Amino acid sequence: IPLTRVQIMRKTRSEKNMLNSFLEEHDYRLYQTSSPGSNITIFPLRNIKNIGDLVSTDQQFGLSIEISRNQEVPFDGVLGLGYPKFSFSGVIPIFDNLKNQGAISEPVFAFYLSKGNPEGSVVMFGGVDTSYYRGTLNWVPLIKAGRWCVRMDRISMNRRIVACNAGCEAILDTGTSLITGPRRLVDNILRFLRAKPRGSEHYVSCSAVNTLPSIDFTINGINYPVPAQAYAIKGSDGNCYITFKPIPVNTPREIWVLGDVFLRQYFSVYDRGNDRIGLAQAV
Image (cartoon, rainbow, N blue to C red; front, side, top):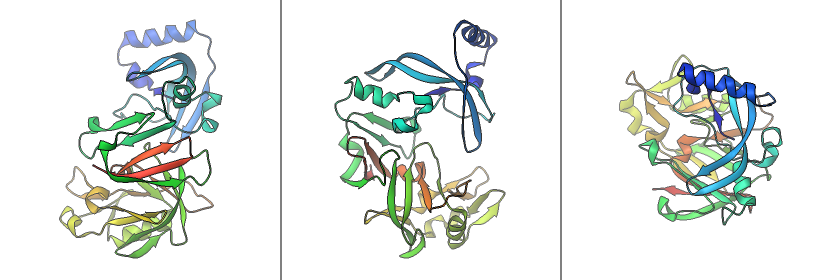
């Protein structure tokens, strides 16, 4: 469900007046949703949405009229690609509309996240372009249909298990920029890397990055290494910041979220027809 932020829409007085007039002229119901660090008040609209040459008719989406965080972000909205059972207020997600209306040939979508220019990133609907990955796709069944969550065997560095030693759950999420996990285990990884704290961040000297080990995520028996150059990002102060963060809520099970730091390294395919995820090394 794309959410258009009001602070972007309200850059000029005319746009603000247009939005207020629209709200007065249309019957709408307010809903509130939240995610870690934000609360959004939205109302649903219906329209025809285009993604490239694909058309989803009578697509319902949410227009934000209030959002708790006021920092600027370089995007205009959020396109939700979760299962329908988790959709907002019973709305049919755009992927399901495309599938139900016959606009796509296969019930799959895929992501290639560019390591350089963000404009080089690609989302694919209804098929996969094999030129964006090397080798073959390794398919991993979902733990349970309805969430893009798979079983992970372990997390290791230099053949030493540093987390997930008895197996755990891994959520693949393009909407998360970092890699997150239980605080105790994230702290264990940061200690192993000898990262120094600065506020809520942890950093290492950029001159030391080439000496740091890759972090291996073993999923369905296959290792997916993430090199230090990918998980240690240079900041404006000249230090390199480690992109591991604790999950802000306590969970009864060990759960990790593999965000963009992981997904830039691995092309990912989300197969709704077979409830599985495919991974291969990205080009």
